[in-house]
Amino acid sequence: NPPTSQLLLKDNPDLKAVVKLYLKLSHAQVDYNSAHEVIIQHLGTTEFPSLHQAQQAVKHLSSVSSLMNDMCVNTCLAFTGPLAAFKSCPQCGEACYQEDILQKSKGKKFVPHQQYSTIPLGPLFQVMS
Image 1: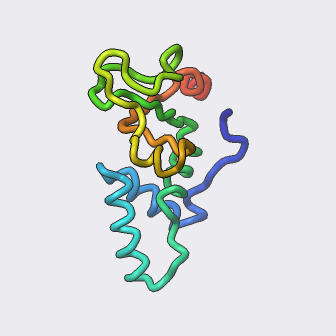
Image 2: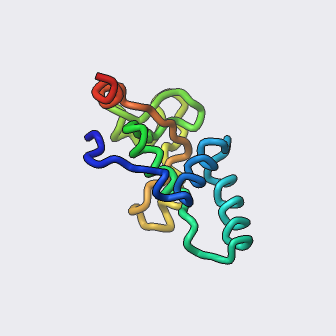
Image 3: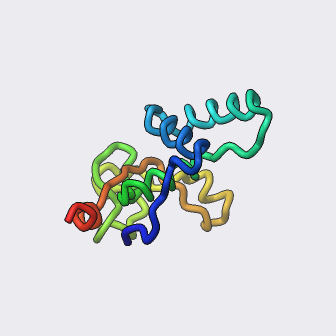
C-alpha cells in the first residue's frame, strides 16, 4: 500500500542524515552499524536512528520495498512458487536451510543458506501513475 502520510526529512535532521548515509553505503548493514557506533560515541547520544529506521524511511519515501526469497546456495534455483516447500535443491541436492541452526532449534528456525531480493513492479507502477 502507498504511504498515507508524507515523511518530511526537513523536520528531522537526524533522519535526513541517516537516509543520506544509508544511500551512500555499498554494504549497508556492516557499514551502517560501524558508522552508527562511531556517530553515537562522537555525539554522546543513544538517540541516533538505527539501520532499520533508515531502511523504513527510504521505503516510505520511495514507496518501494523489496521481497526476500530463499535460493539454492549454488544459485541453481529459487525456492518460490511450486518449489517453496522444498528443503533441498532438486538440481544439486544442497540443503536450502542451514542444518546446524535447524537442528539446534529442533526444527523450528529455518535460516536459508542464501537469499535474493526482488522489487515487485505493481506497487512501483501504482506510485508512478
